[in-house]
Length: 243
Image 1 (cartoon, rainbow, N blue to C red):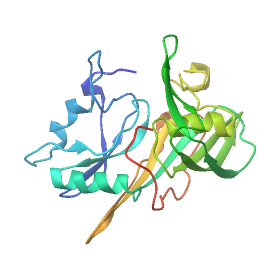
Image 2: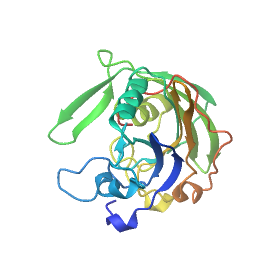
Image 3: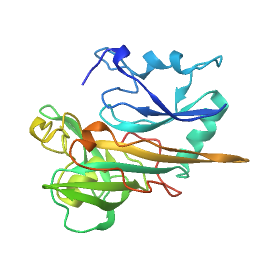
Image 4: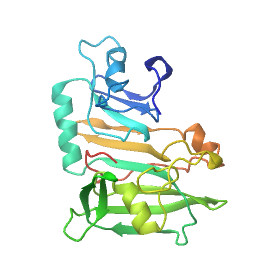
């Protein structure tokens, strides 16, 4: 889902002298791909908005994942926000479209995750007793024509945590997920993994918290889903890992 740099536009969801929260578009990688191509790096200078240095991403979202991405304007702020992620003080809410009908209305998935790799399939995360602890709280938001919009609140932040937990804990992967689901499904309007970072809250000593909500993307609304109210994360929540 690569696009020229000029095609990516950012909504600014939060801004002050220390931080920005942008609405990252689906298809834009945070880090430069090994094969080359456009990444967030190509936009950081434009996001300076008069400040001396370009901002830097504090955490990671997968290339396909849209929504709230926190950027720090200076090294001290970056260090503080990174520490808040590590201490699980950052609240996050994700919305994902599960490619199936989730029977129960809410619950908690606690499945340890481990990384494996093979020549045929490359690397992926799998549930494994000897893996790292991973906990995700979830709640059904809406059900439409065999699809389920689910709100995910990760307590930990392991790599691909929500994607693996959807498949292993809810019985179906996220719509469009090429690794843990059936891949892109143009017939259902899924040209990417349907996962959206809907909200983030970051506590700050002596200052109001950073708080931002990203509107539901057009490909979610095209399926008939609407943004739930409210999408406000609680603390503590996720760690600074790729979801």
